[in-house]
Length: 343
Image (tube, rainbow, N blue to C red; front, side, top):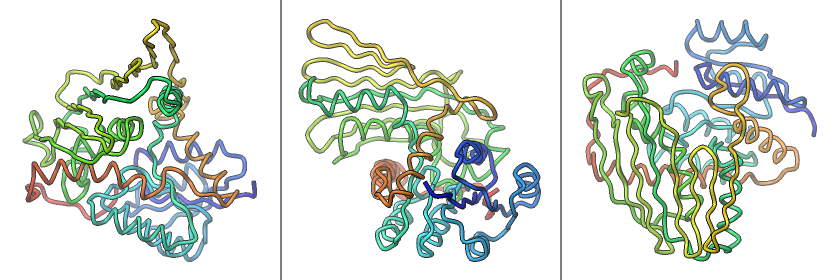
């Protein structure tokens, strides 16, 4: 693989995972970092030795990277991704695709018109449990999939939002729990069970209403295109971050992801797949599947091949969340002052 010149735009918390993945890739060279916050930018420059920029367009035009990683707050995703794609620069984009449906469609259109490729970070699809679950379901050995039940029972303190005010706002984040935390599990459900044709649900702010304007709890019933039905519940009102659960029922067996994967077949046989080991270093608790996704995308770029988790694929999960919001918040409530930066 020819060496790739790479830049990271947005030097917040999640950028550490991307910088670590770049450092682990022998044929990738970090040439620039970008942030509108001077302190964050200075820290990133000091840590990486890369050139620093406050304006992502200047970075793209002066440095001409092959790939940009976009790790900004959600509201900046679409504009930066479109700017890169229009310049023929490949994109690794943190979830979500965009902070609202229309912005997501802009990225989809820009990707379709560009010679460049885009990867959206639904890295949990690279987990050993997810890959094996998909393989089993796709093989048809368990028969028709009837549906899934999934939960995300986590918590976030008020300080989490006060530290980064954009996280708790419609304008900055595009939503709360579903856009920030539960989106990965929701993506797994729609990927494993199948495209979603109908959404019924509700969202609300149960414990953090004095801090955020977005939801901290949500429930959904998903009707899949083939008639399967899934039930999804997520909250940040739990007292701890419990393991996510995805239980899938099929005609001739079931699959349960609860840390590892347990497959129970109608003949009584049981298969157990352990989860991928955690990575090491900063933010290790996010696992190493980010590295797997990023390196797989780099390989697809070098081979001039399409990447499977692209903008159109990511729009599917964004649309489910937006359908939920349209039912619960026909007009998005705005109570908290916004910050325009992507710090």
